[in-house]
Image 1 (cartoon, rainbow, N blue to C red):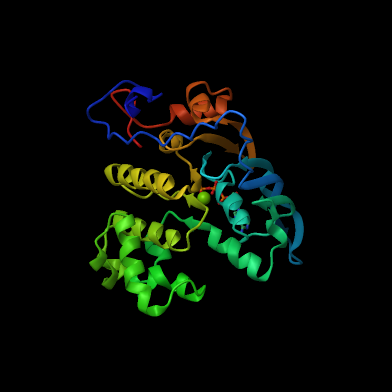
Image 2: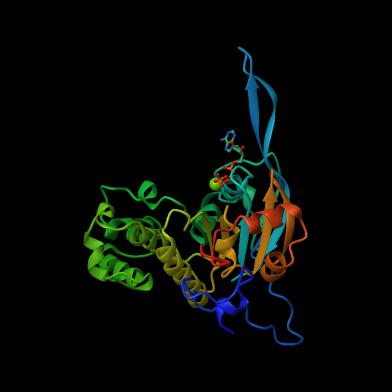
Length: 302
Ligand SMILES: Nc1ncnc2c1ncn2[C@@H]1O[C@H](COP(=O)(O)OP(=O)(O)OP(=O)(O)O)[C@@H](O)[C@H]1O
Ligand SMILES: [Mg+2]
């Protein structure tokens, strides 16, 4: 079935960029037990204090993430959607251990993420990578692409410096760039190419999961489709799981297996992508879908 035929936003339209067929999760052979969860988030609360007065007393909390629970399987793509300020990035930063939660549990491959230390924490930081919205801000302008791609592996002792060029060449090919790009600096690439470099950097540490926080939001439409296709190919090739965060529900329609919808720090709707997109139960989800820009009745943002 062609992707456009299953597009919940409208009929076939030649002006719409066609994405490749999403990688369907492999059917589970009868009798085989379900794969153990990769990531489990349980009743997670990340609150920021609101300080008031000359003594900066805590007058209340911004409940950026408020009682969020979900779990993901290896190789799954979970779309997290919701309007600006609903807590998506705070959720991802808490999973990445960049914010300390008020309460709740995060387990990765069954291990308690919030109490990881030393080598175990290092391994978690390898397994869980992130690609942010603005590649310009996250790539050091003074480092060559070779340095950017291999720094992490050298720090973790995964490669020797004489192997760096070969490894960087393989990573660049993986993301559709020429190996000679390794000797250039970030300013010498387009926005889409820079995002490919960020993806290559994330792949370098052979992660099990990548958090994509608005990873394609700053890209124009045709480049966005190319980068989404690349992410889908890499997911298939390396059995990656993605937590795909976006304020724009139209972006996840082709890539998410499941979707959670966040509103004011809480999950208001969840389910398989097709169900949430075609039969949204919550008026809030219906409004998000209605807000997707269209050309001739068809979504144009994916
Ligand atoms: N360090 C912080 N201190 C205080 N409040 C914060 C902090 N970080 C985020 N917030 C607040 O938490 C709420 C959620 O912010 P967050 O960045 O997670 O939203 P978001 O869903 O990622 O939005 P966007 O789509 O615009 O990226 C917002 O009200 C924000 O102002
Ligand atoms: Mg955000």
